[in-house]
Image (tube, rainbow, N blue to C red):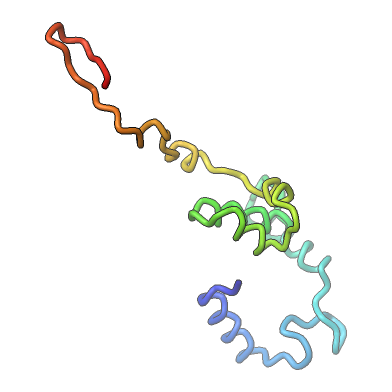
Length: 126
């Protein structure tokens, strides 16, 4: 999936750089940017920003999946977006936020239970 905002950023980049063979060319002419270069850039950014936790393309992939889950995206859609065959693999990527845990409603709240006050001040259910 390609964000509309990211598409606009990429268009500005493309207009400014006018890459020939690859959108993100490598050091050598006609070659793409290498995966290791992306990992190195993540490490440098981590150090510059003072982030203590690991930062890598893989961590960004986990974050993407977790943000989709927090936004209400169903697990099957996340599985397809990540390109996983097995839902168990997808579940390893997901980290449920504290806010999502606390916002989870109890199924009991959906049951038609009425609470009545008794004459003695106690409660009974029906």
